[in-house]
Amino acid sequence: METIVIGEVLKPQGVKGELKIYPLTDNVARFKRLKKIYLSDGKRELPYEIRGVRIDPKEMVFLKLNGIETPEEVEKFRGYQVRIDRTDVQPLKDRWYYFELEGMKVYEKGILLGTLTRVLETGANDIYLVQGEKGEICVPALKSVVMNVDVPGKRMDVELPPGLLED
Image (cartoon, rainbow, N blue to C red):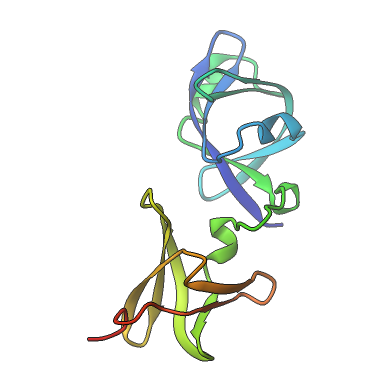
C-alpha cells in the first residue's frame, strides 16, 4: 500500500482528543470526504477511522479519530504526518501532484535529460529540478516548455528555452 502526505499534526485541540492539523494540500475540503487516515512518524503508519472533521476560516483542519480521546493521547502524535491511501487521492484535471512528477524521466527531442527529483514552488510558476549527466537542470513548469506528461509511463517531454543548457 502506498500512502500520500496531506497534513501534519500540530497539537491537541480542546479537551476531547481532537487533533489540530496543518494541511499540506490546496484542497482542505478533501478531509471531509475521508473515512480513514494514517498517522506516521516516518517509520510506521498507524490507521485511524475518522469520527469528525472541522475546518476553520483559516483553513486549519481539526480531526476527531476513533481511539484517541484525550489531549494527552494527541500529544504523542505531535509532528506526525497525516497520510491517506493512494487510492483515496482525487485526480486532478490538467495538473499533477508532485509525487506523480517526482521520479519521471525528462526528455527533450527524444534525448534523456535526467530524472525529475524535486518540484520547487516559486510563486510565479513551479520549477522542476532535473538531475542528469550534466548536473542539475532547472526546468520552468510552463505550458510553453512542458509539452507532454505521461504519469503512468513516468515520462515528461519538454522543449527548453534557448540557452538554458548552454555552459
